[in-house]
Length: 172
Image (tube, rainbow, N blue to C red; front, top):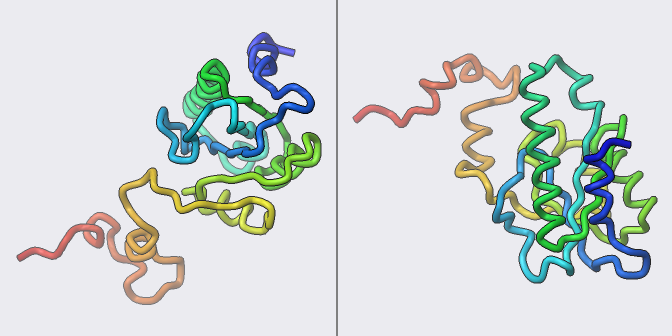
């Protein structure tokens, strides 16, 4: 086991003293002031999922993977040092199955998350009845904007318009 994982493992909750609230922080939600991480740090545990299934779905630049993984690992260490119990889980499964593995392994009754911004992740975790999803307030745009600007393929005549032109407000 690497030194990093041994260090992160120190922040796991001790048996019988687990927090009552667990929050999943996805890789695109790493922020110093996460909206669900309020109150005393010891009362809210943080879950991170590192999955080899995600980069296996499509080619990623190695530099991007290094950036995402180092940011997530750094965030886990920072939250642990701030007093949050941390579960950092590596899995070869996609995020929904990895979360289910972790939930069963640690007997987590209830887990919360901001709704994932990425459609693949959002659709995967939608079937997890025990995962309470909160509206994602980390982004300046809302769902209606994305549905207007990025229509689904085969969405009719407007679906082939230039994204930049479609996103611009009409000229006066």
